[in-house]
Image 1 (cartoon, rainbow, N blue to C red):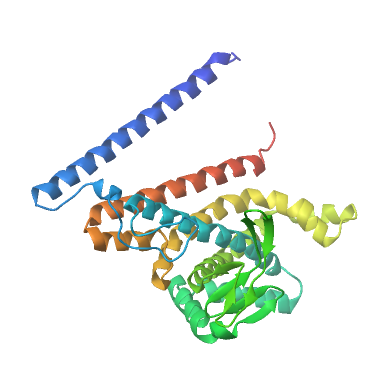
Image 2: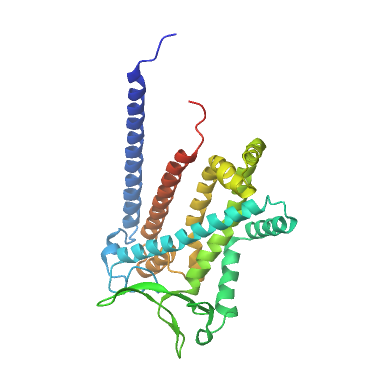
Length: 333
């Protein structure tokens, strides 16, 4: 049997990369041509077009976010604030979904009837009700069922909850004092100090996290069941407890099934954050809608939103694929 020359594999990899690069260039040129053609059609019909509006003053303010923004700043900074707000909501929602979904997935396989039944009821209820409906109901509960701002309740030490949102201790830096923890305090007109999370922000984080957790639970359950029963018996045979067997033996092998499907759920969660516009949270789509109403540049605003969500999705997929390559079982070499 003749051996394959060592250089053939390297040449094949380089050829593959060149082909991929050529495809990327062709796609980029195609997108650029489509954008130019669309702009030309709009101008020929007397419709003002172009992305030059991104440099003009926005003329509106943004209610919350990490990036300071006022009406005198340009539109591009408003879009940047919307992107940051989207990430600000999506990341904690993803963490909540993964942690809660893992617990629910394990609970779905529990031997205890009550635990298994409660986890099953949660999964079936939340994944069969539209996310938008859940967000509206959660927002209604936040703004109508909680106590008024002047009557906020301290649920935990330093954690206050009311219709005005959630206030909690937060590290701050002040000149002459350095870093220290600022604790919220109840005043005459409500809670002051610490970090304040608005009802809109809490709604989108909890809504996305709780909804996606139902799907993550099924992914985790399927991943655990994909591991051969003999692996569990082997763990028990060497003296591991059921919890240790699950954590050290079963879950590491189940990741090869869990991670690819989990990637899809994280992508969906990020894109579903666009529904925050329904509850008034100023994320990317909300900023784009306001900018569209102000400038009339519908095509440009929608193009920016599409480009940002495409970029975010590609970055999430890239990160998860790299993680999947590390945890996947490679089999016998």
